[in-house]
Length: 325
Image (cartoon, one colour):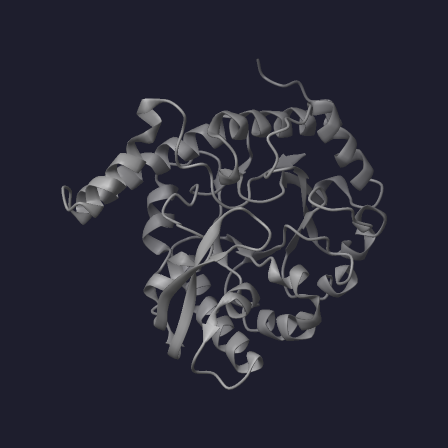
């Protein structure tokens, strides 16, 4: 049974050596180092993140998203027509994001993520996937001073997102996560979201709609008709009926969020295995991948590593595969 990660990996560790990025950012703010020197530190931190994810035994990794200040920051910095605004709370977490402010027509050259993906591809030994922010999440969290309606705004963001995905596809990315918690958080917009995803359908080989924080109960059957290869479901953050209805996604790969990425309590391998076995009653084994619920950067790095190890050990328990010592 395959395992994967979702979102960002913790950027800062507890010991002095693993706080180099924090020191570099402070020095950059004080103009003691230039952009090129900061990029070198980001690259080094990306190597560390990928190395720790792979050392846990994860089958499909990402680049750790160490350059992402928040989910929307990468595109808010690079898309024309968008500026970075005030700090706002990110859903019900004790974390914040810079609210994008849409000032004019959104446009992009599609290269926002290409450099980082290309670097990570030269580092990763496991399968590597890319990620982009989801169009509904960007559109519902942004402050809009240009588009006349949420429909216009969502579809404009979808067109820009499609161009970013095509850029990644041209760079060799065959798997792309679209992190879009608003699809389950704002279920009233599900039909608009489906229309937006229609504009992403041909942008890359294998797209995954990644939801988290909220149960998919109100839209689970609707998600099955989205033009994506995989759906990520968080079954830990809140009570959900998803386990009894996963057969609705029988035509999709299911990325099952079974390790709680917002709680320091450490799951056991047996607990992970029980979640997987419950899902396997309705999902074929070759269509199920186990994952954390969301970004691990909500956790201390040592806890994140331990949770990934439990995730891998639990997956191996299900299939009877021996876990390397």
